[in-house]
Length: 559
Image 1 (tube, rainbow, N blue to C red):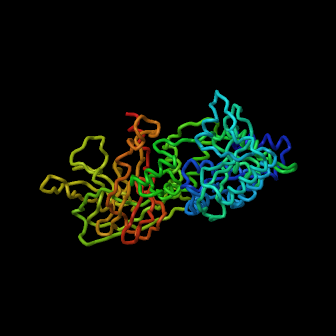
Image 2: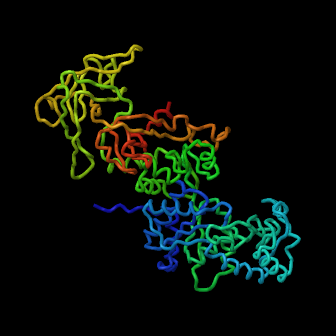
Image 3: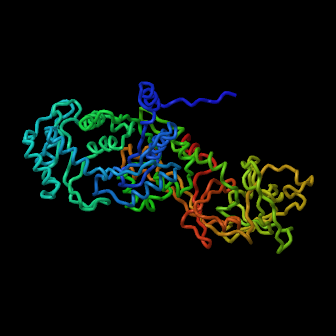
């Protein structure tokens, strides 16, 4: 049987073409360069999988580099969270790098550009500089400080570094072309003054390099061969190449920037500003709330690293942005958890069921399969007794012929147990059913081999023994927004919050789950996939719904 050959994406085609043109395979190096100003989200996961996936494909090193050039927004907390997320996704980086490691080198190169009359200190306000930039159809005009002498620029720049000026008094700009069609080439700012302590360099610096100046030079220092960015940086490529060209030395690897499209996920937002608003306004309970698209939120909800990597691989890499339905991410979770998650029984909306002909005070144990997907089957023992809990939705006093669950006068099988027949109900003063009284067929026990055990009935219900079940808090999470693109609607994106994105219920689960540890995954049979939340304790079990057994939104959206 022929092995299926996976087609290359356009980034891989670029790399293959470079190799065919003579680029040394041993010089391939990639990087993932997050800014540590927030938590990584599902969009970052695609970039992580792309860069580290290329590293695995070509047996090339991949750096984890923190673009930490803005001390006003960056914290060590975010650095630690990013490292944890990348590791959790299953990737190892070759070198842990920081743009702040290169502050001195970047400064020295900036001095070199000043000496070459390719950079100057501008003493205008940011508003004046912006106004002089022009428009896409109107060329910019020179700053009145553009022709300062090299000596004056060197003196001012050193004094900026020494902290002699306030923020906003001066900036350092590259001297390129104020009439360039690409507005980013119109004398871009390289340095600004910021009197802020940095999470790594403390108060050593009060001038900080801008992203465009830092990015390409950092790639060059690390000898990154292919610098992969999202499409919003496409216009920056010309500037990236100009900056690298200024410091390039013959024989070194010249980094190549290429861009790929973002993959937007439906029913969510990934803007850090909007995610921060959700946190600050208490819509969610922190960055790792299981409704958040952050990697930490997905992890807490119960998504596996394999499911996220498979999602990233499935959506692939493209040159045009498009919207990916979140149901694909949910499908990837189901597919992976189906193979791994042990099957257990839990009742989320309990209704007591009494087997009137079962001996009072007696308990027996039935054998239940842990996971039918396992190559070697394993089993567990479940207590079975006279009083059980089933789901309220699984019983109707009266029902039509299409209702195959329990109804008065009808029979169903209790999974791994017996066939039962509903005989009568007990109601409270308001007419609500509080108990269903049934009889069971003692010869119909699953697996007993009796003719009665082979008898077919149309419905099979999950259950737990009332005397042995453990109480648990179950958090049923759903999509955070009702609209596929909440941030592209007429109303503010908060207007489209799903009021049912979290429903908490007290449930009963089989007794063995008392041993469950945070992070463990289970399939609650007939209900969905759940995992143990970090809040969980032996005396207070907490489970999060990762995803239902089926896409419940498909029916809603086609109505």
